[in-house]
Image (cartoon, rainbow over all chains, first blue to last red; front, top):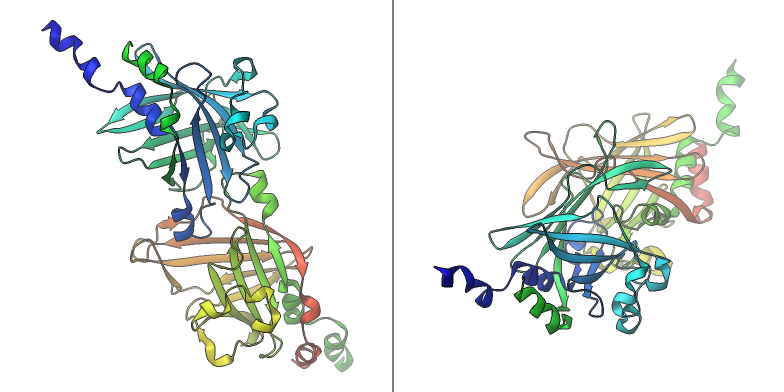
Length: 214
Length: 214
């Protein structure tokens, strides 16, 4: 009985390890944009291990494909287990312009320091597994506020699905904090990305070892 | 009294002439895409006079800004007065690939012939004026069918507003022919274009003369 309880963690990949491997890639929705003009912008999302930071640290840049060096969103994500839950913590970067495009420039990327990071309260993802897929949703509470248009705050409802086959689907919608009405985001407008470049080989062995001990 | 009835058409610009002048341009939604990533693809719509064809003939190409030589829609529009209504008739072009990108290549554009054109039944626009703006809507009847996704036909509800100041706003939505439910198109997702290149000087004087006689 004891053997059964202990052994799986030595033989199975820990979910956190699996999630970080599946995320470490460049994703593109080129096919979707091509198939549905002009409803979907052609965008890329690139997640790349920040091997010099804590295990599970990934740089994320999201860009219009037309402007890869001017991401519209740059974040440091930290994939962690907290209170037995798989979580992704989102951080903005101080003076982020310094790092625009660095996800394709590893030397510059590796100069990002922990004290450049600012945790984005209310915008963390809770991740669960469903039939081999990872599904992440911004934590409940309507606290992840962003401004779209002039000065109007909305809270973000955001979800992603990372399939066992490698595809990524995301949906982001903005709601009015008072009425909860949807203010922005498309109707049924899920972005569908294919995995185009694999960066999982950049995950340090030390991270994998840490996750074995979880 | 007779003088009052006749004179305005010699001194005022006929609406059809005004509409063709306002349409003859390149329009870009770059600012909208930049302000709202990733909700709006950066697209261009270019309308350019086909001076060798009938008065009011315009070549239209709509493209992702990233791929100007691969328009996702190319049409010949004919702005006409029919039954006292201002109308825009839409035509596809046979073997349209021959003309992709020609809206930026006048020599090639001027080789488009009338017998290359195929009228798109049910997809014509009825245009009216409201406080100096032109507002066009696809004729009622749910007959303008397009296929999005594999083999699922939807009918298009499409509207544009061309403001007196030169801006263009468009909205396109697809509906199920049976349930009339909205199937594609964004929620509140109006494309907002600015006029970036003027092509109205390419309108032949002979067209303007024709419209004076209407």
